[in-house]
Image (cartoon, rainbow, N blue to C red; front, side, top):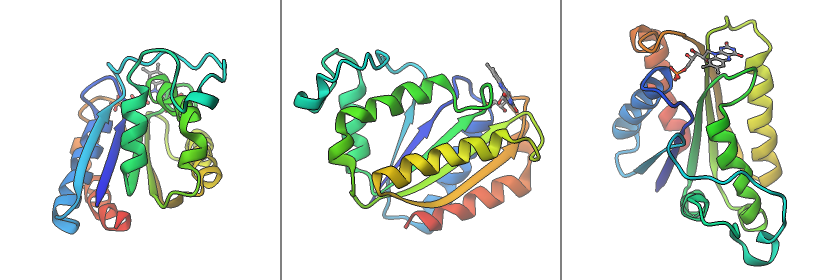
Length: 180
Ligand SMILES: Cc1cc2nc3c(=O)[nH]c(=O)nc-3n(C[C@H](O)[C@H](O)[C@H](O)COP(=O)(O)O)c2cc1C
């Protein structure tokens, strides 16, 4: 079983802490899982130009990291999108990568995958941003025929905040079993 984790943050902070907790949970609850983490920051991704060349090539016409990333998406049984909130949305680093799913859109459709999202912002949980972003991830998954198994959001701001939130970390560890 392959689990793919996307980390949308450019810094070693709350998203990283969340994914560390999830990896701990995966090691305990699905020890057979092969876990791959993709740090969106630092990937070479040319923003989608809407040229539609990928429609015939099934890959982006421009040389970037998207074919390897899309291959990892295709192979994964479960995918977790973990991102900080940037301006009521996911980080641009993550969105660039998701836009490139367009090249494999038809191939991705209907592949059996379990999807989770973890969203971390400075605002308290009453802020509409968490619902907006969760809805976006769910729409993407529904469109591709993938099953959403969890959507969680946490409030944290300083890079060390989530690592100090024992209840949040315990909850995230427990999410791992839902990916099976
Ligand atoms: C460019 C930028 C935009 C942000 N926009 C928001 C926002 O709209 N809402 C919010 O709650 N937090 C916002 N934040 C705060 C981050 O979401 C917050 O600090 C989060 O914990 C960062 O996660 P990380 O430590 O994994 O990078 C923003 C931070 C940055 C750098």
